[in-house]
Amino acid sequence: MKNNYSNYNFDLRSLIRKNILSIEPYISARSEHNKEKNSIFLDANENSFGPPLSFLNSYHRYPDPIQKELKKKISELKNVSTSNIFLGNGSDEIIDLIYRIFSIPGIDNAIIFPPTYGMYEVSGKIHGVDIVKITLTEEEYQLNLDKIKKIVNHHSKIIFICSPNNPTGNDIKRKDIEHIIRIFSGIIVLDEAYIDFSYQKSFSIDICKYPNLIILQTLSKSWGLAGLRIGIAIASKEIISWMNKIKHPYNISYLSQEIAIKALENKDLFFYHLKNIFSERKYMEKSLQKISIIEKVYPSSANFLLVKINFSSKNLYKYLMEKNVFVRDRSKIVLCNHCLRITIGNHEENEYLINKIKKYSTKTTFKK
Image 1 (cartoon, one colour):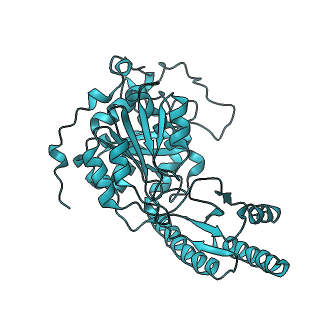
Image 2 (cartoon, rainbow, N blue to C red):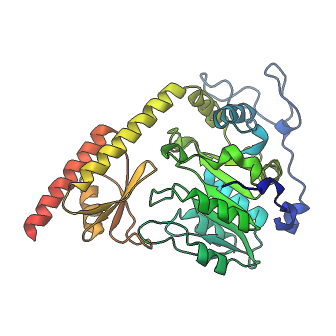
Image 3 (cartoon, helix red, strand yellow):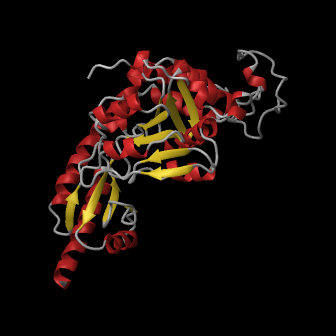
């Protein structure tokens, strides 16, 4: 489908809160100049003698507030300009900033599509924004375009779409996402946290075509750096500039930046791990489908599987916990009745899980 988004008449400033438009951002000491390693830093009230640990010789200084080196690595990896990249303390910080910039408490609403990632709703409620829920279609877990058109109104400021979706694992149809971007005059947040596990291409390479789109990615999933808490936003230069204006001055630690840069240089090991996850996902799908208590294994483009149990999933969930295997019980979430979400582990972990479910299945069948 050919689009004309580059000609789309979109006024970003009209969506931004008035108090944000007039804000004067905090200027940190480290953002006032381009620092050199051999410089003498007497500007930020740091301890020039360093920490009481001889093996740490850099951590007494504040980190780069705009993460130049790390953004450069991500820019090369994603083929996106550094000016289109914002880094947050996890994607959760970015979601919080989006609400702060674009939604007026008590007036505006945000639209989400359950079952989906829970922080869209939690963060919205924290900010006093009405959350409008439009459930995905049953079984296929896709957008209901007709309902969206009927429900969106002039108070709808933000739409959150997760693709591949969490907890269902499926890709949202690209043509449907493009359609929503085209018809919606607010901000579209496309959460691509699991995009590296999908065969569907990211929207990030065409970000310049979409002035109202914010793409969320992360180093927590495919890059295995969940402990560092580094979320990525890819958007227009103007949107990124507003995020930089209101973020906390030093939101990504020195250590997190340092480790992430080293990890991003090791692409061969990254792709090796990614290949193993694809292989193990296929193994898990086939193995689980053969177990009698498993009613359905949903197709997945993520590093997890949504699995439907043919009776109470809670009992299996509790049994696995007793065996020191921890999965997520998603049975209370809309359209996920009797479902567990199972992350793809290494082969030994996956085999252990499969064997425990088989034993549980045999016991359950015998009882019946």
